[in-house]
Length: 96
Image 1: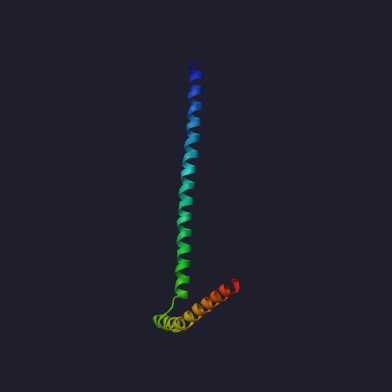
Image 2: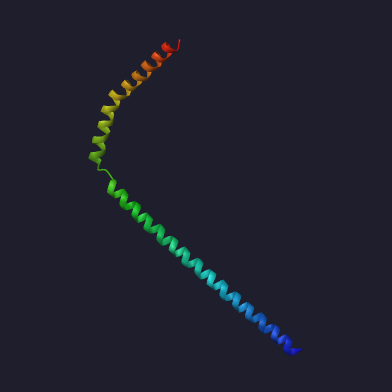
């Protein structure tokens, strides 16, 4: 009877040992994946920062572009509005 009990205890000890190994392996894999994720996120952020610097405009370029937008906006926008109103008026006349 003692030998059967000892065999059962040894079997349970082996199961516990195997489960502990599986748990530690799982935890290790989780830590590894988390570290890879953080490293990849940092790499992507570095790439984004590089692209931002590459396409960043100087203050002089921004002022020049804003002046062009203001100049073009004043003349282009009313002509588009007039075209739309003219088209609407013609459409209403034809529709009658």
